[in-house]
Length: 157
Image (cartoon, rainbow, N blue to C red; front, side, top):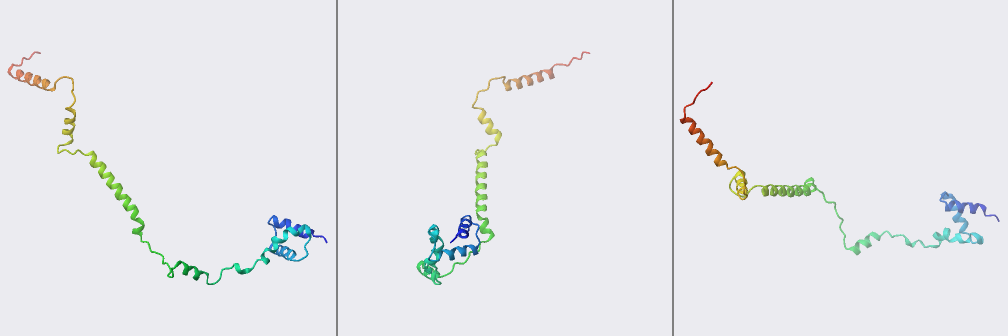
């Protein structure tokens, strides 16, 4: 007997090109008792479904048995989440940023009672500055002004 058609179907089956009808033909062929020795190695592949009992299916009471084992009998309802609950983490983050910024600004402000210029002057008095004396310049100008008032002005043209 020539089994070229079965050989061709097997080749197409392993290339995933068979239809359901062709697969049913292969199942029917390999479910026979007389299968050629060259094709006997494929018999288990197509007869596996028939040899296994159908008790592997879950029963109708499976869910009830599992729920009894867990101990939960009531159903869980979905929790409604309001928009304020969704935005709460953003509000917290904004508050943290505001606190950090306000602390940073407070750290830049002087803690003393005076104004900023007095604070800068107090910082610069610690250093020695070498140069002409400002007080000396002021006194020289005022002396020359007083002498100019006493002396008569002479007009020369």
